[in-house]
Amino acid sequence: MKMRKILVLLLAGLLIFGLLTGCAGPKDAGKIVMGTNADFPPFEFRNEQNEVDGFDVDIAKAIAEALGKELVIEDMAFDGLIAALKTKKIDMVVAGMTITEERSEEVNFSDPPYYDAGQTVVVKADNQEIKGVEDLDGKLIAVQLGTTGDFEAHDLFPAEKIRQFNQVNEAFLELGNNRVDAIIIDIPVADRYIELKGGFKTVGGKFTEEFFGIAIHKDNKELLEQVNKVMKELRESGKYDELLLKWFN
Ligand code: GLN
Image 1 (cartoon, rainbow, N blue to C red):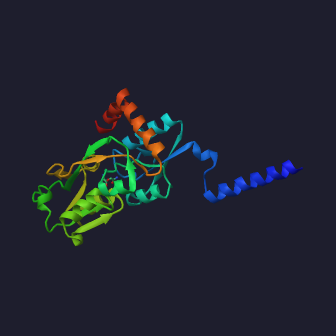
Image 2: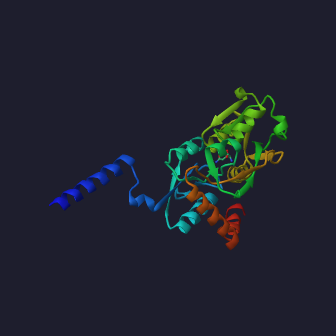
Image 3: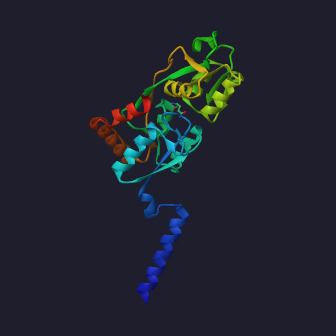
């Protein structure tokens, strides 16, 4: 009788704990949650089946597989990713995220970086006037909110000349409709968008040097080590090169 009482109390306690923490149940230990913004092809985008797909997703899948966990993808505004990581709604950010000093104060990044990129300028294909970032004085510029493109634009130009959008496709819509003169955005994504949509071009090549990392909570040293190890294995096995070839032609 006494034993049963203890058992019931124990189970009730566990249940309440589970409810209060909103997770922490054993079922979640089998999952790893990736946060991303699925409007950044070829790193992450919605495919024809409306699933989140891309280079980053394949990398995250390889990480999940190596850890024996199921990958869960949370698609959210880019600007909210670090907060989601800090509040532990997600386990890692895999989102073409540039490693910056400011972000490194808040989160840890996988090391070494997994992709080299940089910002470029996109204009309409028939624009003869803007040939690079140096021609953007006095022009209206679209950026994605909270990105390094946004930060660069604000470093170089007055805020009233900058239009911030949550999604990359909104910035392209604005440019397509002549409501802005240019977009500042990561070069591999600019190239892919232009390929998909047509009617735009990049000018001046890349004007910043940036490196992408997987962001992980500062407390979660274990996951950081695991991710670094898996990334090393992916490079050594040739799988990483395979994925580069698959997603970047
Ligand atoms: N690389 C840019 C950044 O980290 C943009 C990333 C993105 O829009 N997904 O700010």
